[in-house]
Every structure is written in structure tokens, then in C-alpha cells.
Image 1 (cartoon, rainbow, N blue to C red):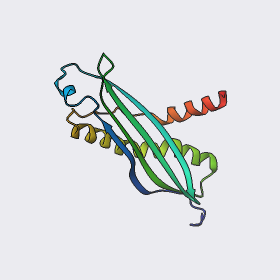
Image 2 (image 1 turned 180 degrees about the vertical axis):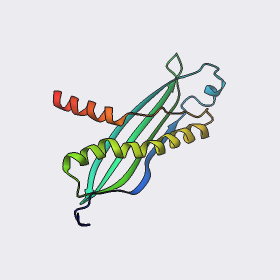
Image 3 (image 1 turned 135 degrees about the vertical axis):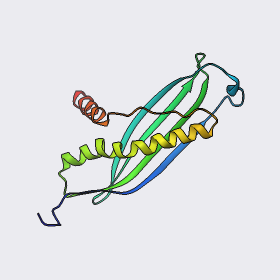
Length: 146
């Protein structure tokens, strides 16, 4: 195989595209002894930005609420990266953008969420691993059903 037809998959840049944290009921919320319920939502997105270069991102939203529905904190991070994909079949590009890239980005998003929540005065939120392969195949099934 010549170098010009060799498949290329590389990380060009990793970055936080968007980051937010809200503690709407501070300072009173810090006096609560109740353990909040923590909800996590994850979404992936990707787009071609120029020939061979794609931006892929994952958005992780963490909401902690008390039983009375008061929000303790809400943290959202959009962790993104620019990836170079060259000499790769189109169907494989979709899998790389839907599974491999989010798997690369998730540890960075997890660290950003944990650090941000800790800086807000709360115990760190440790996010469980995510099966992006299952998420990707579920989204394909939903597209086929629609």
C-alpha cells in the first residue's frame, strides 16, 4: 500500500468548546444535608469542516436535584476535537465519528465535569463509562424507524 492510500485517523486538536455551571440556590443550598439525585445526559455530534478534517464533540449535562425539584447544580460541557480521517470508506468514517471519537473525548469531558463541580464546592461527580457503540447503533435504529 502506498503512503497516499494508507488510512489515516489522527487527533489534530482537543478542546473545550463550551462550559457552563449553575448553582441557582447558592449559598443556601450548601446548608442542605439531603443527597441530591444526579442525572446525566450525553449527546454526540460531528461535522465535516474541510477535506479530511472533522469536528466531533460530546455534550455531557449533569443535573443534581433535591427531592423538592430544587436544582443543586447544573453543569454542561461540550468537549470537542478535530480529527483527520483520510483514505477511509464513508461507512467507516460514520462509525469513527459516532464511536471512536466520542470514546477519545469522553475522559476529557469527565475530568472537566468533575473539576468544575469540585470548584463549585461540591464533591466530585464521577461519571460511569459510556458505551458509545451501543449509542451509535441505537441512533441508527431510530433513524431507520423514522
